[in-house]
Length: 302
Image 1 (cartoon, one colour):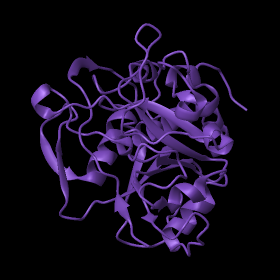
Image 2: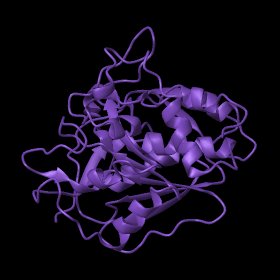
Image 3: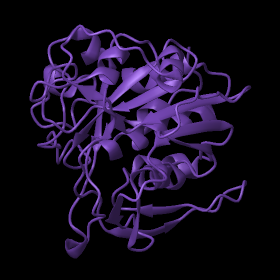
């Protein structure tokens, strides 16, 4: 069984000069690769405080990506870029960086919402029904997707349905999250959508497919990538859709402080928008585009 990160290219956009003064002294700056909903969340005082986001990824290899999330051009590991998305979108969340080179069970923080971001795949060609003897890390995370933590998994960049093979290879981690009550699959739109300018699915993004279980777990967000030379971030792929949704979960947890992982997951899924997507189709877009503004709107959730 091989473990590999998803193939990535370019993501993001230019920057907008925007800062927020806030009572817990968290630095925030809005950039155009972000959805505008995050500005309103910050203005309301929700920065991810009181939550933990666990990023399992590559932090130690010599494979790096060149990009710029608006601060400066930099070259760093895939995991560092994923974690930086969370740092910038949910700046008050605790971030636990876990390198996937070390197969140990992932511990959860007590007394707070835990969100786990997985921007990698575990593909092999053992057939659709192969039994995978998961190591301690993945076994713990799959168990947490039963309700202990919000688990956000990048859908993949092969342009196929979640659970379907790509060139004969299956992502068994995707497969084993299907039907888990607090697992969310993160697909990518080519931009953030609006009613006046609906967004389309990114050409590389995996889609929800015909499995109704996947459809009910599938969200999309805009990954507005472009090359550095054209003012983009240089980062693209569902790897960078996942940390946006993970950050939204943390921001929700900072408002709904007594909510369970199941409640936070359902709130994100149930408030997704379909009117901001061009040609919305449940087999492509699942529940729709994640809407932080809608998810934050009620005074309480149950």
